[in-house]
Length: 293
Ligand code: FAD
Image 1 (tube, rainbow, N blue to C red):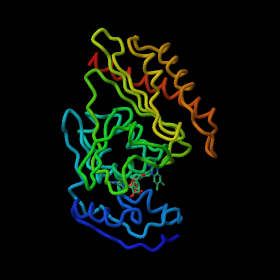
Image 2 (image 1 turned 90 degrees about the vertical axis):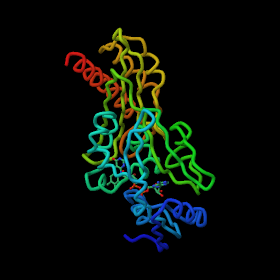
Image 3 (image 1 turned 120 degrees about the vertical axis):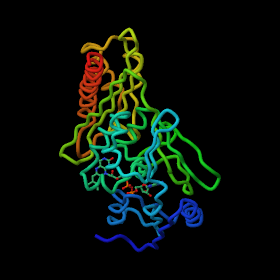
Image 4 (image 1 turned 180 degrees about the vertical axis):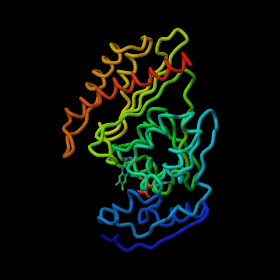
């Protein structure tokens, strides 16, 4: 299959790319890793007249500690994040989740910015952003703005970015001490998009009770979903199988997945509950191990 005809632009600086985007507007598409866009073009599901390739804009590929968290440039490849010692140490949930994206070839080309901008509700990174309450930086003709996940992800493949804005950075706050984190997902085959995925984070207070918890899911709605009522139920409790099981039941009730050719809504709800229990147990075990180390 071949893509429809387009005019190719390969800016080397961010201002050049922004100028092109402002000029060409709705007739153009930005090309990052191409792992989602190129199949869409080949299947004739997108027909841009212009492609603006970001791959020569090296200033958009970086990973650094900043403002109490980690800033990742939009053109940083999934594989760079997966292999980063800094990410494994400071944001293990992100490292685990990125490692589940497709196959190694896809992760070598696919980018953090592309994945978040594409806003596929089955993708891992939007849910990780929701779990951490991180933000994206959008850069456009009138400057930059930072947007949190709840305002950024609107619905399936749709974000609040304007047509003349580029997603230039994704920022994740570093979790507080005594935090355990786990990403778990169920896919039909290795490398497939997850039927359901879940990022769980558990922070303990000095007295051993749960000070904070984050449960963010993928594959159960048109955007990443935070299981807020299960999170609220866990706060103040002592970690344990009973309360984790109850959180799992609450998550299964709280989410509203659709049925599709891959799985029914009921099955997805069931899987969401089981993943919650298992991810919370794994996160708690990390903390127990840290305490005894
Ligand atoms: P592209 O494909 O280049 O672009 C995707 C979209 O985002 C386009 O609309 C583009 O215009 C826009 N865009 C890109 N960058 C920017 C930017 N900086 N600012 C504004 N808009 C931008 N993904 C998962 O999350 N989980 C999976 O399990 C998974 N499995 C896959 C399996 C296969 C076989 C394949 C082919 C892909 C899979 N993917 C999966 C998709 C992959 O992760 C892509 O890398 C990701 O969805 C898009 O990133 P990209 O850099 O390739 O973006």
